[in-house]
Structures are given as structure tokens and as C-alpha cells.
Length: 253
Image (cartoon, rainbow, N blue to C red; front, side):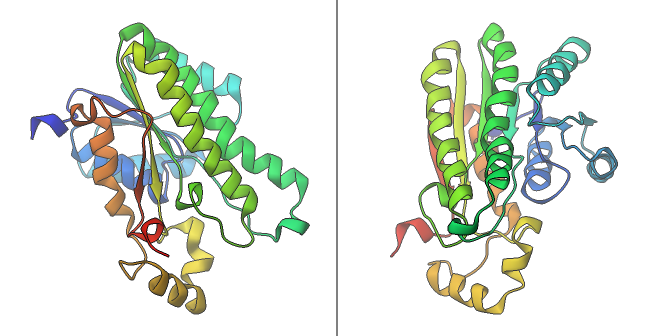
């Protein structure tokens, strides 16, 4: 359907060398978008790019540290000057650290905030400045089921993902008038490298299957439809929204 066609548009996906970011990048390419992959590990990033190129995708790489505001601004300004417009931004880069709150190291709290929240502001602002001049653009921030729910041992992570949802609302409030659509996707529990320890824990997986109405872990490919929708003309009047893709876990006690 033409409403969902991303042909002729370029999408920057942060943290896209593996996991959810890689899956979303692949899905955007299948919808017609040209890709710009980002991560700090240049070698792993190039491996991901080669995999997607072999599938027929048009892919560039832009390695920079999303927690460094100058590095983000320089990289994005350089790409816009040398190669052209970034029409879609997916702020996916993130990390997790599990420790009881009373023992949580302050330096790790700061690292979580920089990686999961500051990066969304730094990269989002740098890309939005160009989008505002053009009068259009799509920004999609990756939130989490922890945007709405908490569980033991990850209170700081929950803090960061709540902030991502509210920053998304702020982006929409400030930038919708310039033609930007700013939304978030909140994944539930997905089988990713970030969750490898939980996936490998039979007790946790059994709990999750009982807790989730769908009765299973999510597959990263199941996030693609939401991302393509929010990146496309089909979502032209969707702004400031957080779309939960969680198998029903936030709908059920």
C-alpha cells in the first residue's frame, strides 16, 4: 500500500548493529527506505551493513557515540551536507543493568541515563534541526514495557524509559507545528541479546509466559510493523504517542 511505502526516504537507526535496532533497520529497508546504520563498534556495524546489502538494501554506516552531543551533531550535520536528508530517525540505542536498587552503583545510574535518555535528546535534536527546515520528518524513540511497569532490580532502567516516553511527548509538543511526527514504540519482553540472561532462565521464562496474555516471548520481527507505520504517511496525524507492542502484558493484571 502506498501509505506505508518508504521509497525515496532515508532512515537513521541508532544501535542498529544487532538486536531490535538491526531488525527495525531491515524492516524499514524492506519497506523501501535507504538505511544509515549507527553504533560505536565500527567493525560490527559494517558486518550488519554487509548482511543487509546482500539482501538488496541500500545501506550507509555512520559510527558515532550517541552519548556524546558533539559527536552526534558533527556526524549528523556531516551526513546531511555530504549525502542528503535524513527523513526518519529511530532512536534505538540503549542498555540495561540489573542490580537491587539499594545496591545500584551511582556511576551506572549515570551511564544508563546518558545511554537511554541523553542520547535520545542529543540525536533527536541534531536531526530535528534539519527536519524543521524541511517541514517534515519522522522521529521514533524506543521506549519499553518498563515505561509503564516496574519489576525488581531495574528501577533506574524503568526511570530512563519513563523519561523517553515523556521526552517523546515533549518533542511532539514542540515540533509537530514544523511538520514532524514524534512517537515511541514500547516493546514488551523480546528475545534479544539485551535479554539473553532472562531468556536463558527457565524460571523467568515460565513466569513471563504466564504473565503475558500472548503466552510467549516476542520476536524482534514483530516490532517492524509498528516502526514502518510510524515512519510512513499512514501515521501523518499520530504525534506524541507511545505504541506498546507487548503481547498484552500492560493490559492485564
